[in-house]
Length: 141
Image 1 (cartoon, one colour):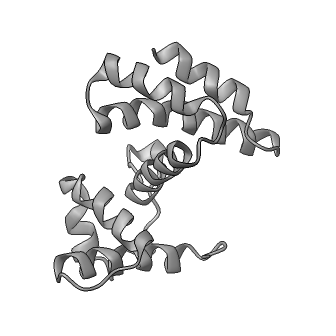
Image 2 (cartoon, rainbow, N blue to C red):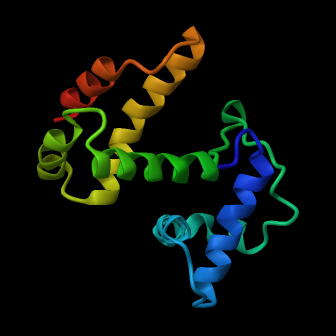
C-alpha cells in the first residue's frame, strides 16, 4: 500500500490517530492502528504533533526506539495470529498467554523473535526463516 514511502506510511498512522480522537469513520486498518496507538500512551504525543517529526530517524545506537516500527510489529503479530501464518503460531499463543498473562506483554516478547527473524532475513538478503522464528517463540514458552 505504501511501498517504500516512509513519510506516507507515517502520515497514515497520524491520520488514523486523528480520526480516532475525533470519532470519525475509519477503515479497518485505521482502526487497528488507532488501537495500537491507544495502547501506547508514551507515543501519543508524537502522533498529535507529528508534522515536524515525520521525517525523524530513530537510531538504536543513540538509544532511540522507533515508535512506527514498534507499532508496526504489533500489527504484524496480530495479522500473523489472525491468519495463522506462519503455521503453528496460533498454537503457541495460549502457551505464551499462560506464561506472560497479558496480550500486550506477550506481543512485546514475541517482537524480540520477530525482530530477530527480520534482521537475519535483511542481513542475509533472504526471506525470514519461519522455522527459526517459531523455534524462538517456542523457547519463550
